[in-house]
Amino acid sequence: MDIEQLRNAIVGEVIVPGDPGYDEARRVWNGIIDRRPAVIARCAGLADVVEVVRFAREHPIEVSIRGGGHQIAGSAVCDEGLVIDLSTMNGVFVDPVARTARVQAGARWRDVDRATQCFGLATTGGEVSETGVAGLTLGGGMGLTQRAFGLACDGLRSIEIVTADGVVRTASPHEHPELFWAARGGGRGLGVVTAFEFGLHPLGPDVALHQTAFDYADAPAGMRAWRDAALAAPETISPELMLLPIPPDPEIPEEVHGQHVFMTAELFAGDPADARPAFAPFTTLGREVVDLSGTMPYVAIQSSFDPLAPAGGRYYFKSHMLDELSDAAIDELLACDRERPAVGSGFILVVIRTLGGAIDRVSADESAFAHRGARFNLSFDAMWEDPADDAAMIGWCRATWERMQKYANGGVYVNFAGFDDEADIASTMGAHATRLAEVRGRYDPAGLFDGAARRP
Image 1 (tube, one colour):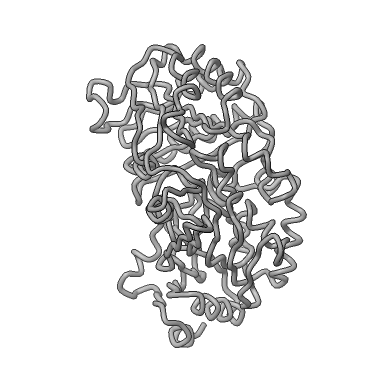
Image 2 (cartoon, rainbow, N blue to C red; image 1 turned 135 degrees about the vertical axis):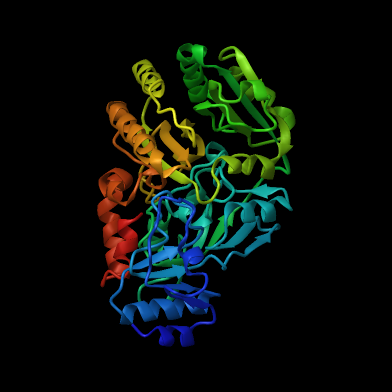
């Protein structure tokens, strides 16, 4: 492989083992991931991406694509391969009249939220502001406004993509519609998406949030009441429920730090003055431990979980899609939760997110996202620091996932699918797997991005 050829072909950096900054360039958000690529091409713009794709075609080497580098499985980097690094391509360009945003693929959701909130506009994005736009959107993209605005991928108007032949294409409902279909929830492996165009909705800058932690002893009845309220909720809220120990947040009274609770959270996607009726069913689920509700900046809510998930920590997420949340499922989930490992370097979030609403207004075959019609996503999110705790934390998540499988519909959210070898295409893509493979084969017949496809 002629590294000098690549260096001469692009404006951006070409980084190889031994170069200053190599270890930093190969590092991703999840500290468990420790891969050593042969070369990292940090692209300065679209023309660089075209040159790197053409270079990759000439040299038989595994390819991975780095946007925000935030995925649990570490898909952004590959061992002994070529990383197409888009991290410096992070511009966000808002058209407030058309209510659209053009977002480069290296941007994070904090970049999008800051830019769009200047005009009181938003689209569904990640619940941690460090999350990369590209990975979240290509996998579907759940967020706090999903029932009001749809998934992140539902907000797409078009994408700009460099396909395996080195050609820049725009994919939309009218141009390369099959490629656009696949990009909306099909994960990676289609090419190098370099920009996204999102439609925006009026929201903010201040929004109403209901977030209350309740006594864990009240969870059996409280979770049943939450489920019923979530299923009946208006689309202006996307109810979430979490089982967790209260983190040492300075805004939370110190005397309740570490107390095990069940917590609910609902962001109102509308005028804060109109939020009270939507929140009312979620205010009496149990004995209150702490109430974090109020009206606050949207960007503050979108970044409020950041301290719990710093770059370099160790992470493992795994999830199920559920058509219902039965009483038996609630009881078994609580039994599993009481067996969670006690480790000093981290904690586990059990999160139930409510689907439906705008998500279901997109037909099942309109995008590659395979889980429309599911009512809930159940996720096990482990976060810790000490490698000595790896086995306990990952082991509990996997064992709990297996125990809860009988209550699930067989679907797995691709962004919360565990590590590479666990991202089963039948579970993540369901009935769309065959069509997705056909689209990939059409635009990448030689399999240049097959490695990326195996790490969706």
